[in-house]
Amino acid sequence: MSFQDIGYVSKVSGVLSPRQYVSTFIDGDDFMLTPVTAEDYVITQSSAGTAALDASAENGVILLDCASSTVVQGIQMQRTSAQFKPKAGREIYFECRLKVADSATGPQFFAGLAEVDTTIIAASAVSTANHIAFTSISTDNILLANAEKGGVGDTTTGTTLVEATYVVLGIKVSGLDKITYYVDGVAVSEIDTTANVPIVALAPSFVCQSSGTTDPIVHLDYWICQQTR
Image (cartoon, rainbow, N blue to C red; front, side, top):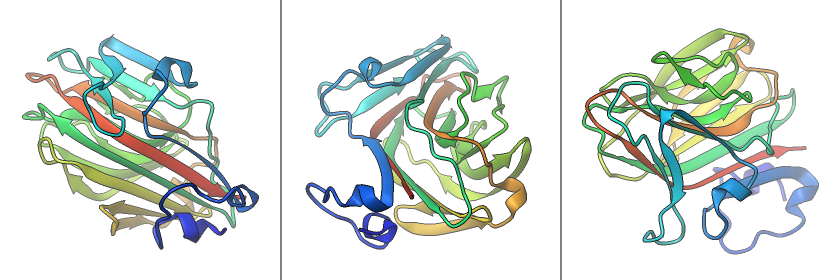
């Protein structure tokens, strides 16, 4: 099974063939059964915030709740046990489905891949020096498509969050010189310079912090990340 078989070219329903592991490394979570604290995540508060499974949601959802209306306060979650390092000749595909509630003034937001870092967003800025993600530190719900290598970054078009409306965010990293960003399966932008593709191990990462006034909550339905061997 090739990377394209389980990436954007086609979706596979049901149980994937064990042969997939011959050609790809894959990890993900649909938040169905196990408490996240037992699943090799590192969950970090910025003064406040919670990460808990939503018992009332269908098919598994985790709530990343700022639990605060104070700017920069909120919650971060990283899957540190699963790390993906961009390499020449290999592809990485990341996808997640989520929605944000109580977003009148927008969350400080991160969804994508980042180096292991307990302060991905700090002092109202994306502070991690190596990442590939959809990000926002504004109050207008505009997500930017962002990549940074050793502190050298580039930003391009992402999408605008709609209150309480699910969106599928996707990222495809092709070797060391191309990153394509997708919204609901449609390519929206591209970064194509080696200066902005990090070459360190990156972990699936999510941040929901308040931009002030409101207490945003990210409803994360699933994430999946895979890399060709």
